[in-house]
Length: 98
Image 1 (cartoon, rainbow, N blue to C red):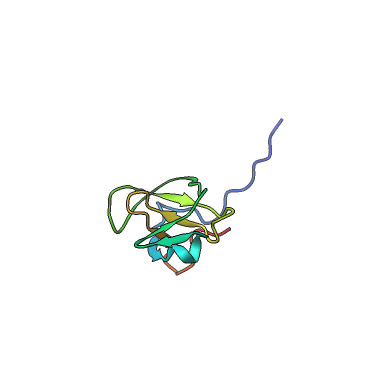
Image 2: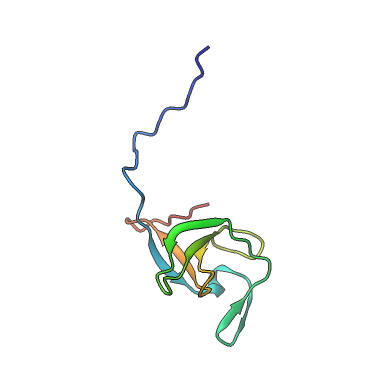
């Protein structure tokens, strides 16, 4: 018996997609409280490690943060320097679409 497989999309990617990262104000993406030079938020879960490294500190791979109770916008997060980033494709479209 032949099993039907969905057709491959006509547009195959030749290689990894280049993402353009833009630093975001944490207050615009996460519900939390600002203390001096930091921004604290409770109960935020990361969903995986990305291949991109932090453009600011260069220390670690960025973590994917999807929308959840305290997160308004899906974004990338650096565990080392605690910065948030939006990810965009070459044509300016958001890469993290829900």
